[in-house]
Amino acid sequence: MTTNSLASPLRSITPIHARARLLQSFETALEAAGLSPATIRLYAHGVRRLYAFLERMGLDAPLSGISAEHLREWLNAERRAGASPATIEALHKSARRFWRFLVEEGEATEDVAARLPAPKVPVKVVQALTREQISALFRACQRDKTLLGLRDQAIIACLLDTGLRAAELLSLTVEGLDRRERRSLVLGKGARERLVSFEAKTLRLIDRYHRRAGIDAGPLFRGRSGEPLSQAALYLTIRRRGRQAGIEGLHPHLFRHTTASALLEAGLQEGDVRVIMGWSRRSHMLERYTAAGAAERALEARGRVRLVR
Image (cartoon, rainbow, N blue to C red):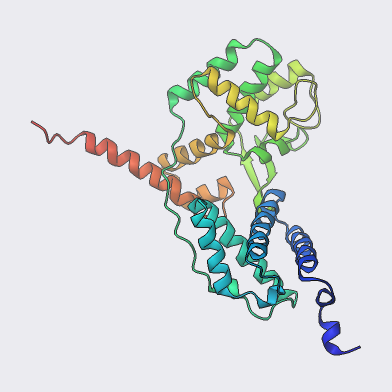
């Protein structure tokens, strides 16, 4: 057997099957690196879209033969097909991560994706919930005199108080909640642990819900039948309470926007906000919230200037 035949077993099977096998290995590597299931799905989705493009173009050569020009044409094709700037950014990240993996595994000799310029993504102004909307949400829950009304008050308070992502909120347990210190350890994106703190009022709402539901162990929030609340059920719950409060399209992440904006408005240092929200140093989310606050302040200042007389 020659040295070349030992270099990669994938050389002996068809390119299409080799690509599928490499994608499986890529997902395994991402999982080993501690990435969240959602992030792994996002990267894998990007690679599958690349594979589909290569098939349409008839490029069935091994991935080691794919050039940076091929990748640029793929992203351009995605743009022409109507992909949003955010989607193009996600696909670009998928390609960069995938080719680093290919080089590490000896399946490519050059990281051609590193030559792709980062796409320009417009900074969107992130809107936060107003005080009036927050009050309306709590009133909507309070009108519901059932156990679900108590639960949803506690959920909304918890989301506002901590700025947790949906998956992080649903990972909270009774055992992990330190009521005396009013804090809990949370495993966030990228398998990064951080402490979150709770206001006394939030813990009171959680306690009231638990006492009524007879919850003394396990997940903090439950479904109608006592099962752990799922992400789908959480999204439906928040959307329903939003409609009752006159807020269309409400989703759990909007509470995170609101928390971050409030922390910045209160004068917390940007580094502290990053820690509290669980953002890495490379994340651009803080800039989006800073832009939102700056836009609001600019509009308020503009309102004090009278030009039409």
